[in-house]
Image 1 (cartoon, rainbow, N blue to C red):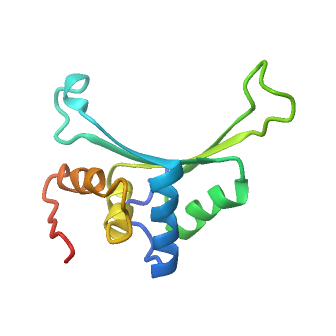
Image 2: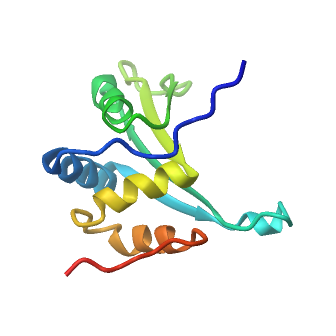
Length: 131
């Protein structure tokens, strides 16, 4: 039995979208990887949005509110300072990432241009810069 990952972000309340955008601007990343070098038949780059934090309920909020992504927890690194916390990562890729970025775009600051590039990198993507 195989269940496909959803590709559309749930509709976010404006306050949630603004908060998520601030978290991605500060504690997250948006990556665009050209898959054509490793996958010659690929028609679009790979998009990923990721947020890392030591507070698990915050990372879980991303998954619950968007209905997208995966959570990975990594232990504190070997030889780390005593008491160092585990790090939790939430990530979403491909069309799910683009669907999320479309909702966060009005609120992104630091990573706005990168988010715009991610959106337009998808075939058939329509992009209109908000005024």
